[in-house]
Image (cartoon, rainbow, N blue to C red; front, side):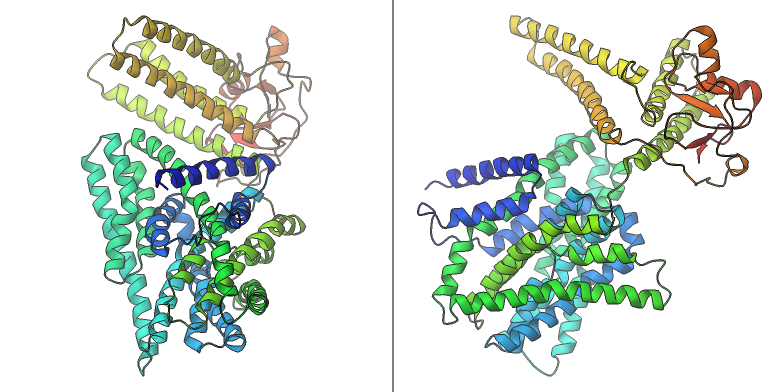
Length: 628
């Protein structure tokens, strides 16, 4: 069979199954593993089907880790470093040796082989846990901790597996503990150093190259630029790829062009979608080969399955035992300010889904390893078992613990505040440029520049309000009318293209500008839709050191509770209402025609207003431009 056909079938299956999973609200990794396992027993399936572990560890793992690291905040990793270090190193070792004791008692293997098995099943997957966590909507701090753990725990597990492999091969000696510690330190520190050097190399190229295609291509090479040299010198390629990904992502806004960042995000999103889903399909497709390997071994399928279930339960129990015990001890020792809360720890202790690294590491065990077929089967059972048992029950547990994902109302408030601060900074810079300019800038140019910033800020504040469906906001009107205009412009360009009166390169440039503007409008619409589904804002207690907010009340009696005082007099229509907390004046927002709330501040100097929309309690200080 030509190699192109299997690649096509794998890719098409991933696209179809992942789409179905999204439509029916099921975890894509679970569905892909289940379908792959079912297909593996079909007569038409090639047998034996076994994926070379080097393909996974060198082909799939580096880009997936790099992509996950690129989407992880360096600030969050630094803030949660104690928790992440504990879970990615100590918890992995605790699980590995706990499982080793059980396996040593149940399987006829030396302790070194049992430790290797423990290290194989110890690390949660970098994709499965966070994919499920984001799908069911866990708090951002829990997701950040799980992401940080899954980025670094593979390094601990693989170093432990390699150490155990050396002992299995007869390398035990008096310096075993010293050698293991030395190897672990070199893997960690050496991998981090090589990853940082890779980041310096990539960032140097970024500073000297502005071509978008070249920059995106270099981004695709970056995981292996860090991973391969680290593995060559027996350091951790996992840590190298992660460090390089986090560092380049943190520095990208300063050293990379905006166009290349947008293009890179789109291309990486497509690549990671295919890779991370394909690895779970490949896990399922190996099921028959692994099962038959145990059936033909001396252990027997029934006995091995029983042992696998016991080890699965051990893996699932050890994680909450460690995390809950650590949480109790951290509170007793006064570390509660940096540890997760009890409920967050409970949900994190159940988010231990295993994945592709577990199975790939099992296949890396030497052929002379005692009970190797049984160990590979146990790794499969642990992987599938955690995906099914924990993956399906994680959402139920989060609801019982009353843990929810990020509140879109809080996101809307932060978005409005951040956008307003950015627009204010841009306006100040505009005034500085105008003062220092050697040329006379036309008034209409200055007016357009100011209007663009104001429109973006107004759009962010409009998300905080509620539309009754009888009118549309100015931003909604702009998007609707501009979308219609773009559609007409594109139709005209296509007609000229079909007549053959324009050069292809010119047509591409014009179509590209139209597509870019339309994609920006569509992206804003999607973001608005996700935020405005539940937008009943609760009062905000934060005052950001503003004395006006601290002194102002949260409510006063409105002078005109039926609407904007000036709009009612003028017969105009407002968008959203604002209440002055000094005198009770009700005015309209800056997206309205009259902008009477801001005009009231200009005329009276009353500094603080609050939203007068139903269910909203946020306040704004005109004097200091802060939210409270």
